[in-house]
Length: 244
Image (cartoon, rainbow, N blue to C red; front, side, top):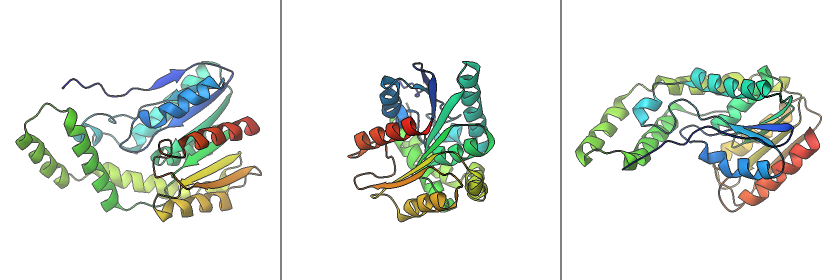
């Protein structure tokens, strides 16, 4: 089966830009519909594809949070090099954690987080990688026996980048009280309760004068898909219009 991994995308439009950051084990498909929606509303959009994502699980595990942060910085710098000064950052899950880091270390005008984790255990993240591998195997030209062996080998893999992931979550959690830009924290009411608590914690601790918190009844973890996706897109747009 021919397979081509999703790629980073850049949609140029008006003078205000939005950096869109996808999930762990996800791809830019996570944010493509939101990106096209914002582009149609005269926002320039950049969505980087993290290193190793979209490839097989063993390739994914060759990279870690530092690589993905470098991908995000490169995308942000690309927007600046293109002449954009007014940049907002929007992230889902791991992308939301990286968006916090953008807000802390770079100079965005506004921040949107969806499904932000303030804690994640190693067992859950390892299962996420195994599920990613199973999903990706449908595109791999291998025998059933080889695919089964790969999963056995994967479960024995140290997955050291997962430890990095938990560390960056902890590190950014300690710095959220330094955030002063307009912030919108969204969570799905069909998702694990911890994401609601994480969003509430973020909004309670940031120093922003303009901040919003909202849960969506029909949304799960990947909030850009599902029954509330159109509402979420519209309300992110409204927040961006008010923020910069």
